[in-house]
Amino acid sequence: MPASGVSAAAIAARLSALGLSTRTEEHRRHTSVEAEVPDALSAESWREVLDAVAEADRFGLLATSLNGRTLWAVVRKAVPTTGDVGGPSYQR
Image (cartoon, rainbow, N blue to C red):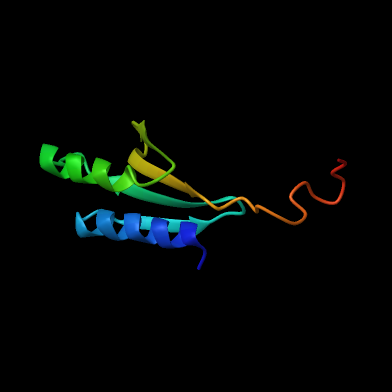
């Protein structure tokens, strides 16, 4: 598992320990974690949730009247430091 996956798994584990149902998904450039946030989350739990997602590169909250509240966090995968960074059509 890439380092981003390990970090995302740690975030998901912390959110799960707080009683949130999480989903983790690998993407080409990042690993994402999503969790449904119940309406009745205490202020103390919110602080712990924010501490958990603060470990991510980006995070946010999507709230709609139809789907409730979904917390998301993104951990970027490392960019290669050598090799074919620009791709096959990259010209120097």
